[in-house]
Length: 239
Image 1: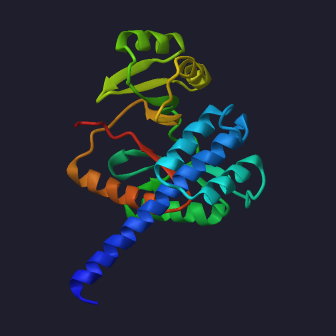
Image 2: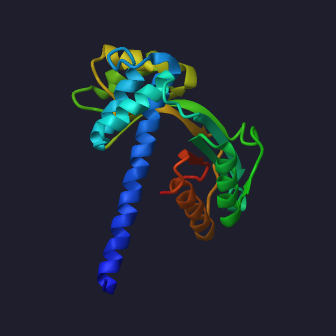
Image 3: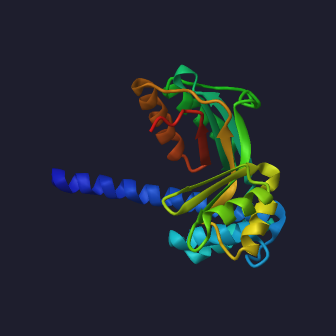
């Protein structure tokens, strides 16, 4: 194989791996939506409906989706459980990791090594308690929605912050407002592109170029791990 062919093969391998990670995260959302108590029917489980739409968007195989639903219902669970890890990257950047694993010893060992190799340290559970708030987050296409009327409807449903950018509403509210916001969206006859609980930093830090390089290195390690499903930091958006 020539040098050019080898480079193409490497790029294709990386693309296949990235595609696999998209599948892993999309299927995790399916299982979690079912497991949360909403059941396996997307007509009555709004979170599952959104997760299934994401799977269709990324062309996740139907068999994989059905297994994820079965896993959420308690069958074929293979001993998986949700885990979280809290730590600090270089220069005190807070990093919160969410995962799903059937081997906690393997996962914590891997995550600790990623922090160590990136100039950070894995901390104790609860060490970032005051740095991240868990919030309900929705991304809703504007479509025919009137900005002022929709904003008032969302505030009435419990949202704290509503922003419109590039014809997409970002709605953020307290964790316990998730149900009331999703009910209001259904009432309005609109469906979000994304919906879920995310960790929003209460305080942020500016990262210099060297720190960003290390954080991106840590992010790459975590993204490449099949047990990791979400990573949050408190880096200030200086864009």
